[in-house]
Image 1 (spheres, rainbow, N blue to C red):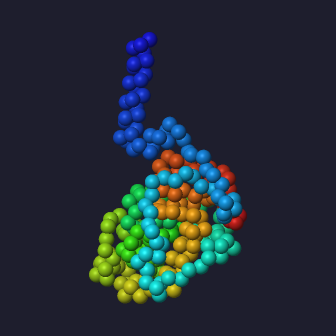
Image 2: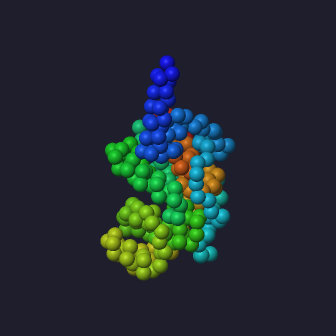
Length: 255
């Protein structure tokens, strides 16, 4: 009997050790504990939040932005167009899970989560749709990177610019942005001009207001359907949450 217990105990240790090495500590905890329970948000009505994970926090969501680039709106002004502001669509089709992703280029946790979201969307055959929000809270480089990515979107190359900028530290000097433009096949002069355009200011304004409305305190932050996730989330738990939201149907205001 003792030998059997020792064998089972040793097997558990070996499996646990392999899982920790293969998938990391958070994934191993998921295997043992499952998805945490979400709590209802006071506002907006009908949304909920998972407990905080590890995240990057900044002091000022306007850091690095010049006064001419700052335009604020009250968060509650978004409630009448919340689905469009969050997910980029007026309504969400049945069976589709919308995800709003808020990130900063200097956030190390974002560098792990962003490629995972890109892959999920690309392999979902349209069943997962990600709306990317720039939330530069960690310094002037983050703010300039956000404006550059949004300017690249004006030329249809947001995903490429976002994926390039999220991978490594950078200083978004004019020379760097010209090299980036050449690498991505962009018009550099147009990108530099668009970085200061009203469209980019409006996109940053909406994302900041959404972050305030949902009480986001750092990056990464996700709205997976009706569920707010702030900080790290493992691939296993993210997949679980997506299926829960798929079964629940479109989030409030998106039907």
